[in-house]
Image 1 (cartoon, helix red, strand yellow):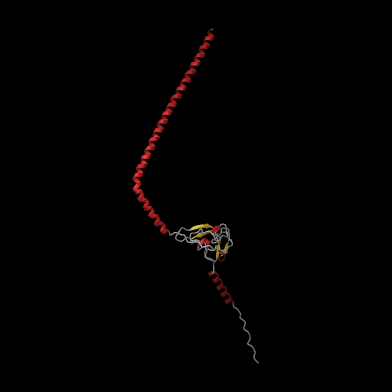
Image 2 (spheres, rainbow, N blue to C red):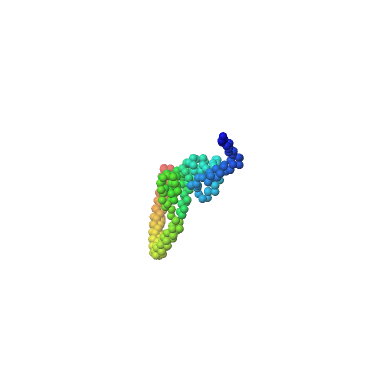
Length: 219
């Protein structure tokens, strides 16, 4: 009579359990969220598995970075979402000028970064409108050369015209000052004459009163 073989029980050893846990942690680290909204200077700050809030209010595991929930009051854990009111989103704008946005601008269906990185989950497509700095500098240099050429052609006329205007203004100012001084001198002469007349009138009146008193006393 045939009898089935005894069943084998798989017993997991502590070493196998530890190895399995390490593999799971490695997979979790590989699946860590991308550094959206983080400046290149801060990438090393977010490289550890436990990240501290920049304001010192606490810490959070890296897997909760940009998870849509605000763990730090200053928004350290949500640089790429609008979860924290105090958060800031970094636009890299490669080739153009980088920019910092308030978190409320992230995924609001309005393209604020010229590279469109602030609308990565809003469902709209933002065209990359960033301008190359080299092209901007070359355009500025061309405009500068044109401006210098134009200035060289008109500088002599401009200088002469400016000097003529300055001389005219200077002459007008001198004439105005002379007229004001003459008017002031005339006013001073008139005031001085009035003062002299009033003084002479007061002296004559006092003498008249004195004579009247003397005449009355003689009677």
